[in-house]
Image 1 (tube, rainbow, N blue to C red):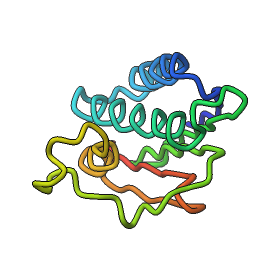
Image 2: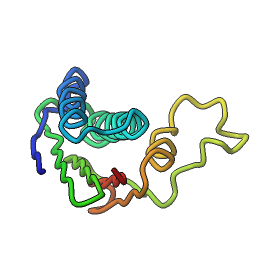
Image 3: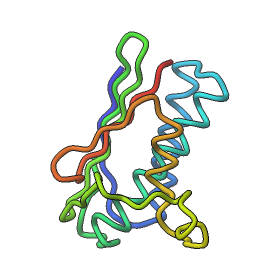
Image 4: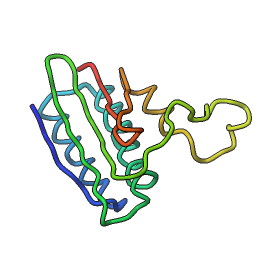
Amino acid sequence: MRKDFEISSASENLRIVEKVIDDMSLELDLTDEVYGNVLVATMEATNNAIVHGNKSDPNKQVQLEIIKNEEVLVIKIKDQGNGFDYAHVPDPTAPENLEKINGRGIFLMKRLSDDIMFYDDGRIVELKFRV
């Protein structure tokens, strides 16, 4: 199974991504736990691409690629931003960061996915889930 699509960088387009994940979950018969992990991590990565990568510029696109191979579901999210230093993202569980509203997205994605990789200076995030 493979699905490629793109959305413009507007937050209301997150519902398109949610619909694709919902449909894919039914097609692949994902367990509730895996579905929840895939949905939350993918939505977080896509929202980050829209807001932080593309600065909510509706003229910029977020590309998504979903591939199901054997026992692994791979989801890649790519933005058109400047990238970021993913190796030095502050730990949201550190005492000095507990009260901060931002900074939990990557932490969540790491916890919910079985593997996460960043490419192209952080403009591409690849999430892997065992299904």
